[in-house]
Image (cartoon, rainbow, N blue to C red; front, top):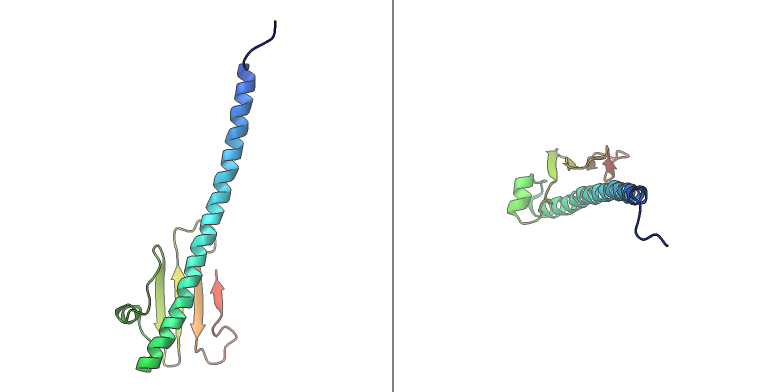
Length: 125
């Protein structure tokens, strides 16, 4: 007479395999989310440079975050924070997303730093 159904050992083996596959999927999903969040940080800095140049074109000075928002030139993505340091010749901006679980959580850009090799380059760390 043939056997019907699965033994307990076979059932446990299937459950363990499913658990391993689910664990791998969760790790991969977290890494993908971190990449997407870092992309919003980079995008915010790119949009900030465009907004600062538009503000500078009108006012002959670089703006603060509040001034850019009031002029409806810039809106920060949810979850990101931004710090802007202005100088007479330009500005340095750092955008951060603390919910990123990988080691790279922030990006910085310098504009108008007097011929520096980092002028206009986005650096993430």
